[in-house]
Image 1 (cartoon, rainbow, N blue to C red):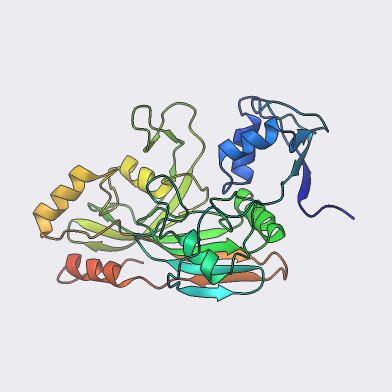
Image 2: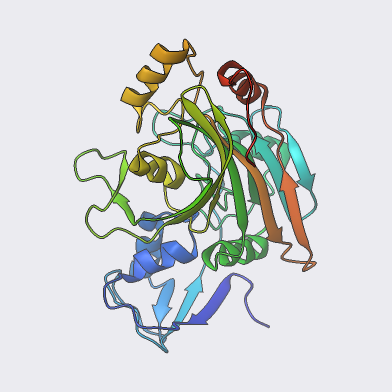
Length: 321
């Protein structure tokens, strides 16, 4: 009987410019590159049965075997933090993350995170593949982003969901308010994203070895000095929607990292001061790993988002979407 903590797959095409640890991070986005490098170096991840270096370049036909070590007890402690659960069964849960909540513990955010709340709610029964700091976490939302997020309760569910994210079969629909009047009713943004060369915590388009990133959008309504739109991300890059709309010249309302100047101008024109980043993960569609059922979850727009739409609405608004 095969070890449920071991997974093997073949490389479909050679990737001469991509390191093995980087390739694996695209397949398992919830697992940090540091963790993947450590697993490669300790022989938990092999290629054709051989221990290789994290810098190995994947070649077509190679057999990659990943053996996930037994999870260690989580560092984070359970905390009785209320959760807005949209769906839950024995394998996974989908929740509506509030704006302002950090997903997992990190330096400066050791408590009051989503992971702390999940450990309490699930009594510690969460997948361990993403490491002791991120139990159950398959994907992430930025701290100030609200909306749908799926959590795995066991390792087989985590692996299956990660594979769906890597294969881009998970549908992720966001609603956002951006600064300025977006002129086109619909659009496609194809622009690679990489770490900013000088700002460690920022991402940027067109710097270094950017990873492909694709966002589609549709304008829903023109507002006063702003635009309400929906965006679908076909890839899952860090800060993707924020970076792509900054690249177009229409940063997200409330985004002080990527659009401070435009947000100051918005406040000058309208008198409105956004309480946070106006980006909401409205809808998530995935295939249940154990039933095969296609499931769609929707997180209603939060009160502060609705207030923003009301504050910025034109006297005679014309809905486009």
